[in-house]
Image (cartoon, rainbow, N blue to C red; front, side, top):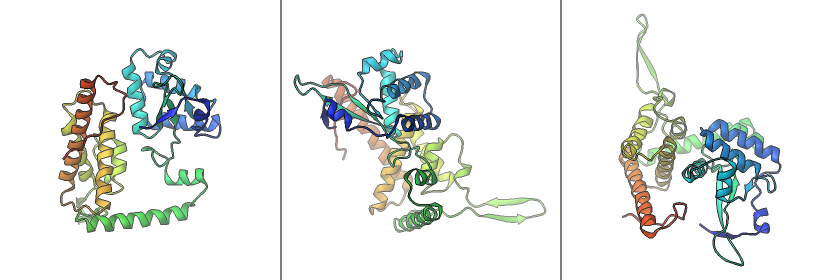
Length: 294
């Protein structure tokens, strides 16, 4: 992670909104899309209140944020930052003192909800209205093009293509029918909506989505410090990596085995980082050490 000079000139560069009203609308949208605890909501309100000078950028010490939000544990503050980063709602920039040296307070930059790096972004139609680009017909054409390319790439990579579920009536008089395949709308309620909505863009099949989430459950059920948001973040990140590798030409015969391997390596990488930080006496918020797992 890069460091920036702790000065007013650098702080001015991190403005992300044109007005305070625009920032308030996006923060209100964040509260609708993500479940925040009461303590996290207080932290969010404090940081938003101190992001009006440079609209969208908060430059406060962690101790001051905790004091103003009446939060007694730094773990709560770290969990809030991790959640905001996982959903793409915030970027954190480290700063250093130019004259005396050493690390200074971080700059916390709020992101727009409909930006591309946000997991829970607005719909394509809302995004188009905000940016003033493609209209409904153009968005529909682009959507159909992306869907056709995705289906073709999946077929080339030996992945079972997902077909539109079809219902075959066997006995109309007795209302008996058999379902060949169920789409994502039939997914179990145990699967988080954020993960379901992402996976259905590529695999619109309830059984496939449930099997992928089952892998996350199996790999993390012994990790007691993992919250539901942590599991969702791990699942989303692993699935995106799988899709990215497949798009780049990786031949995959079994997506479940390949997804299992990605999740396993990510958890192992996290374990190595935590162990190394504890051995070196580093702060938990320090930059992760890069390990290459064979």
